Amino acid sequence: MIKNTSTFKLTALAVITPLLFTACTSTQSNNQQSDAPVPATKFDLSHWKINVPVDLNNDGKIDEIDVEEIQTYAHPDFFYLDDKGYMVFTSPNKALTSANSTNTRSELRQMIRGSNAKIKTKHSKNNFALAVHPLSDRFGSIGGKMEATLKVDHVALRATDPNKKAAYSVVVGQIHAGKDQALIDTKLGYGWGNEPLKIYYKKWPGHETGSIFLELRT
Image (cartoon, rainbow, N blue to C red; front, top):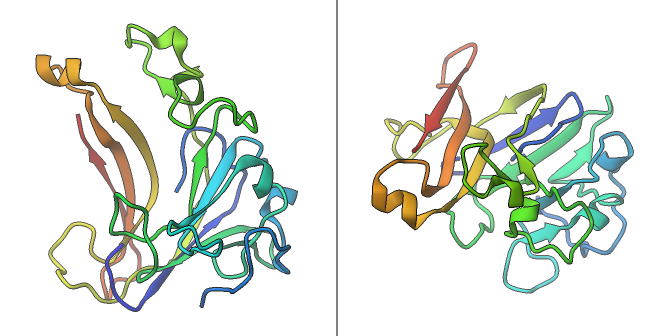
Protein backbone atom coordinates (compact mmCIF):
# COMPACT_ATOMS: atom_id res chain seq x y z
CA MET A 1 0.00 0.00 0.00
CA ILE A 2 2.39 2.65 -1.29
CA LYS A 3 1.34 6.28 -1.38
CA ASN A 4 0.68 7.43 -4.95
CA THR A 5 -2.23 8.20 -7.23
CA SER A 6 -3.14 4.60 -8.08
CA THR A 7 -5.85 2.59 -6.38
CA PHE A 8 -6.31 -1.04 -5.49
CA LYS A 9 -9.40 -3.18 -5.29
CA LEU A 10 -10.14 -6.47 -3.56
CA THR A 11 -13.07 -8.63 -4.58
CA ALA A 12 -14.24 -11.40 -2.28
CA LEU A 13 -15.73 -14.29 -4.21
CA ALA A 14 -16.96 -16.38 -1.30
CA VAL A 15 -18.27 -15.91 2.22
CA ILE A 16 -15.41 -15.15 4.60
CA THR A 17 -15.26 -17.07 7.85
CA PRO A 18 -13.19 -16.03 10.90
CA LEU A 19 -10.27 -15.03 11.59
CA LEU A 20 -9.49 -11.58 10.20
CA PHE A 21 -9.74 -9.82 6.88
CA THR A 22 -8.64 -6.50 5.66
CA ALA A 23 -10.29 -3.81 1.00
CA CYS A 24 -13.73 9.37 -5.66
CA THR A 25 -15.21 9.61 -2.12
CA SER A 26 -18.91 10.11 -1.61
CA THR A 27 -20.44 12.93 0.41
CA GLN A 28 -23.14 10.80 2.02
CA SER A 29 -23.20 10.37 5.80
CA ASN A 30 -22.75 6.98 7.42
CA ASN A 31 -26.41 6.85 8.36
CA GLN A 32 -27.73 7.48 4.87
CA GLN A 33 -28.66 4.48 2.74
CA SER A 34 -26.27 4.08 -0.20
CA ASP A 35 -27.55 3.19 -3.64
CA ALA A 36 -24.81 0.54 -3.85
CA PRO A 37 -25.92 -3.08 -3.22
CA VAL A 38 -25.38 -4.06 0.44
CA PRO A 39 -22.79 -6.85 0.95
CA ALA A 40 -24.56 -8.20 4.06
CA THR A 41 -27.49 -9.28 1.90
CA LYS A 42 -25.27 -12.01 0.44
CA PHE A 43 -22.41 -12.44 2.94
CA ASP A 44 -22.72 -13.33 6.61
CA LEU A 45 -21.37 -10.19 8.30
CA SER A 46 -22.98 -10.82 11.69
CA HIS A 47 -19.53 -10.81 13.32
CA TRP A 48 -17.73 -8.18 11.27
CA LYS A 49 -17.19 -4.42 11.22
CA ILE A 50 -15.46 -2.35 8.53
CA ASN A 51 -13.18 0.67 8.41
CA VAL A 52 -13.35 2.92 5.33
CA PRO A 53 -10.85 5.70 4.51
CA VAL A 54 -13.17 8.70 4.88
CA ASP A 55 -14.51 10.83 7.73
CA LEU A 56 -18.09 11.47 6.75
CA ASN A 57 -19.28 11.97 10.33
CA ASN A 58 -16.59 14.63 10.90
CA ASP A 59 -15.21 13.22 14.14
CA GLY A 60 -11.57 13.51 13.01
CA LYS A 61 -11.09 9.75 12.51
CA ILE A 62 -11.66 7.26 9.72
CA ASP A 63 -15.20 5.88 9.74
CA GLU A 64 -15.85 2.58 11.50
CA ILE A 65 -19.08 0.80 10.61
CA ASP A 66 -20.07 -1.48 13.47
CA VAL A 67 -21.68 -4.92 13.29
CA GLU A 68 -25.24 -3.62 13.57
CA GLU A 69 -24.80 -0.87 10.98
CA ILE A 70 -22.92 -3.01 8.44
CA GLN A 71 -26.05 -5.14 7.97
CA THR A 72 -27.52 -2.30 5.88
CA TYR A 73 -24.31 -0.52 4.85
CA ALA A 74 -22.63 -0.06 1.49
CA HIS A 75 -20.43 2.68 0.10
CA PRO A 76 -20.41 3.14 -3.69
CA ASP A 77 -16.66 3.85 -3.71
CA PHE A 78 -15.26 1.59 -0.98
CA PHE A 79 -17.55 -1.32 -0.05
CA TYR A 80 -20.32 -2.82 -2.16
CA LEU A 81 -21.57 -5.78 -4.19
CA ASP A 82 -20.69 -5.68 -7.88
CA ASP A 83 -22.97 -6.80 -10.71
CA LYS A 84 -21.81 -10.41 -10.21
CA GLY A 85 -22.66 -10.38 -6.51
CA TYR A 86 -19.03 -10.26 -5.35
CA MET A 87 -18.08 -8.21 -2.31
CA VAL A 88 -15.72 -5.39 -3.30
CA PHE A 89 -13.26 -3.39 -1.20
CA THR A 90 -11.58 -0.38 -2.76
CA SER A 91 -9.19 2.16 -1.30
CA PRO A 92 -7.14 4.96 -2.86
CA ASN A 93 -3.48 5.13 -1.91
CA LYS A 94 -3.95 8.72 -0.77
CA ALA A 95 -6.78 9.10 1.72
CA LEU A 96 -7.41 9.27 5.45
CA THR A 97 -5.63 6.66 7.55
CA SER A 98 -6.00 5.30 11.06
CA ALA A 99 -3.94 6.84 13.85
CA ASN A 100 -1.31 4.08 13.88
CA SER A 101 -0.81 3.59 10.15
CA THR A 102 0.28 5.50 7.05
CA ASN A 103 -1.62 3.09 4.77
CA THR A 104 -5.19 3.65 3.66
CA ARG A 105 -7.59 0.75 4.01
CA SER A 106 -11.06 -0.57 3.48
CA GLU A 107 -10.83 -3.37 6.00
CA LEU A 108 -13.10 -5.90 7.62
CA ARG A 109 -12.34 -6.90 11.19
CA GLN A 110 -13.81 -9.91 12.92
CA MET A 111 -15.87 -9.10 16.01
CA ILE A 112 -16.39 -12.27 18.02
CA ARG A 113 -18.82 -10.37 20.26
CA GLY A 114 -21.18 -9.83 17.33
CA SER A 115 -23.46 -6.87 18.00
CA ASN A 116 -22.99 -7.01 21.80
CA ALA A 117 -21.27 -3.63 22.19
CA LYS A 118 -21.13 -4.10 25.98
CA ILE A 119 -18.01 -6.18 25.27
CA LYS A 120 -15.26 -3.73 24.34
CA THR A 121 -13.33 -4.19 21.10
CA LYS A 122 -10.06 -5.07 22.85
CA HIS A 123 -11.69 -7.22 25.55
CA SER A 124 -10.51 -10.83 25.62
CA LYS A 125 -14.06 -12.04 24.89
CA ASN A 126 -13.87 -10.25 21.54
CA ASN A 127 -10.50 -11.76 20.62
CA PHE A 128 -8.85 -15.14 20.24
CA ALA A 129 -5.79 -16.69 21.88
CA LEU A 130 -3.45 -19.53 21.08
CA ALA A 131 -4.10 -22.72 23.03
CA VAL A 132 -0.72 -22.31 24.76
CA HIS A 133 -1.79 -19.02 26.30
CA PRO A 134 -2.06 -19.58 30.08
CA LEU A 135 -5.37 -17.67 30.18
CA SER A 136 -6.79 -18.90 26.89
CA ASP A 137 -10.09 -19.91 28.53
CA ARG A 138 -10.86 -16.23 29.11
CA PHE A 139 -10.91 -15.44 25.39
CA GLY A 140 -13.76 -15.49 22.91
CA SER A 141 -12.07 -18.24 20.90
CA ILE A 142 -9.03 -20.51 21.09
CA GLY A 143 -7.45 -20.28 17.68
CA GLY A 144 -9.57 -19.75 14.62
CA LYS A 145 -9.91 -20.31 10.91
CA MET A 146 -10.28 -18.01 7.95
CA GLU A 147 -11.35 -19.12 4.49
CA ALA A 148 -11.69 -16.71 1.57
CA THR A 149 -11.51 -16.75 -2.19
CA LEU A 150 -10.60 -13.38 -3.62
CA LYS A 151 -9.05 -11.59 -6.54
CA VAL A 152 -7.02 -8.39 -6.66
CA ASP A 153 -7.59 -6.55 -9.92
CA HIS A 154 -5.49 -3.45 -9.31
CA VAL A 155 -2.44 -2.50 -7.21
CA ALA A 156 -0.21 0.58 -7.10
CA LEU A 157 1.51 1.22 -10.43
CA ARG A 158 4.24 3.47 -9.03
CA ALA A 159 6.26 3.42 -5.82
CA THR A 160 8.44 5.97 -4.06
CA ASP A 161 10.85 3.16 -3.16
CA PRO A 162 10.42 0.22 -5.59
CA ASN A 163 12.90 -1.88 -3.60
CA LYS A 164 10.66 -2.09 -0.56
CA LYS A 165 8.91 -5.43 -0.12
CA ALA A 166 5.51 -3.75 0.01
CA ALA A 167 5.97 -1.83 -3.27
CA TYR A 168 3.33 -2.65 -5.92
CA SER A 169 1.37 -4.70 -3.40
CA VAL A 170 -1.71 -4.73 -1.22
CA VAL A 171 -2.37 -6.41 2.12
CA VAL A 172 -5.16 -8.99 1.72
CA GLY A 173 -5.22 -10.40 5.26
CA GLN A 174 -3.60 -10.02 8.63
CA ILE A 175 -3.77 -11.07 12.26
CA HIS A 176 -3.33 -8.37 14.88
CA ALA A 177 -1.91 -9.02 18.34
CA GLY A 178 -1.52 -7.15 21.59
CA LYS A 179 1.83 -6.71 23.30
CA ASP A 180 2.60 -9.03 26.20
CA GLN A 181 5.40 -7.50 28.26
CA ALA A 182 5.98 -10.72 30.22
CA LEU A 183 6.72 -12.63 27.02
CA ILE A 184 8.88 -9.80 25.70
CA ASP A 185 10.94 -9.83 28.91
CA THR A 186 11.51 -13.59 28.74
CA LYS A 187 12.36 -13.38 25.00
CA LEU A 188 10.09 -16.35 24.30
CA GLY A 189 8.45 -14.63 21.36
CA TYR A 190 4.78 -14.12 20.43
CA GLY A 191 4.56 -10.99 22.52
CA TRP A 192 5.61 -8.09 20.34
CA GLY A 193 2.16 -7.16 19.14
CA ASN A 194 1.18 -5.41 15.91
CA GLU A 195 0.80 -7.97 13.08
CA PRO A 196 2.31 -11.42 13.73
CA LEU A 197 1.02 -12.37 10.27
CA LYS A 198 0.47 -10.13 7.26
CA ILE A 199 -0.38 -11.48 3.79
CA TYR A 200 0.42 -9.47 0.66
CA TYR A 201 -0.46 -9.79 -3.01
CA LYS A 202 2.30 -8.22 -5.13
CA LYS A 203 2.56 -7.56 -8.86
CA TRP A 204 5.59 -5.82 -10.34
CA PRO A 205 5.08 -3.52 -13.37
CA GLY A 206 5.32 -5.52 -16.56
CA HIS A 207 4.63 -8.88 -14.91
CA GLU A 208 1.67 -10.90 -16.17
CA THR A 209 0.81 -12.49 -12.84
CA GLY A 210 1.56 -11.51 -9.29
CA SER A 211 2.66 -13.42 -6.23
CA ILE A 212 1.78 -13.87 -2.58
CA PHE A 213 4.21 -13.27 0.24
CA LEU A 214 3.88 -13.37 4.01
CA GLU A 215 5.46 -11.45 6.86
CA LEU A 216 5.73 -13.46 10.08
CA ARG A 217 6.76 -11.71 13.28
CA THR A 218 7.35 -13.29 16.66
